[in-house]
Length: 381
Image (cartoon, rainbow, N blue to C red; front, side, top):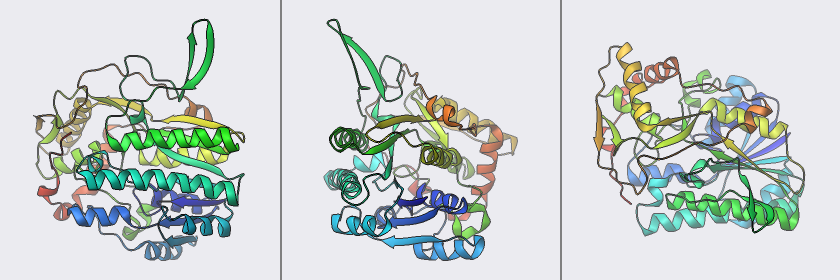
């Protein structure tokens, strides 16, 4: 296939681009370096230094023999997006091009405004570009399990059947986000569902949980091919943060009681889910929603797993409960359904002690790059 990856310089975008090109697809990548710029502005640069996107593509070509075409531009610019879609005529577009951080979205008005404008405008431009240039293109959108919140009922896979006053109908599962970032993801889903009904476009919306991991088969081929690995509170996901905290002897910062439970996924499985979605598209005029997680953990369970794995390496780990800076339930019911991707053939990489140890050993190689002051910001909402 010819596949367009938006946000292809990011934590998930770049490994996805390499993987799909290695699988024989023609891969085009777009990015405007938003995440890099925000990391520089906030002084929370990632663990590993990264070459520019075109340089990454050159190194990938040299190492693997496979091409990734790169374009630097803003997905909020409709003229730019239209021109890319018009030239590429992609079979599918993978839409990662959003401001990805809940804490960043809650920093201040400037950050909130950027999040809303960037995320919704990018999604709208994708939809219109597909409609005008390549109406049979499969849109694969990365949503988030955070859209659902933590309801006191089982979370279904995107949809729910409701009976009311003797009538039955099928609706999007109720959403109740816990941050502005997650709220924009809900609005993304609403935009997609509106245009699916209106224009008959083809969409897969992947409700992804927090991703962990630092390596894929492709990133391991050359140090310059590493993906973005943030360990700060703004852009670093919880398990990645805990790994780095453990390596430098910083207490693992558990918010409140630590009973907050979410669904998690290994970065390798994220890429596998994208591939499975590409190879098994929905029908035209369908919004398919899949919950993209492989197992659930409370924050306490994650911290304890990191502690045990590190102690097997002789690293002493302390766990510290801090005042929860977020408005969220710390003890709640959480039972999501996530069978759709398994049914398509996903073979999960579960969070074993070996997986954590491999991450710890990788981070240890770059221990000198870790800045303790970047870890905990105490962003409150």
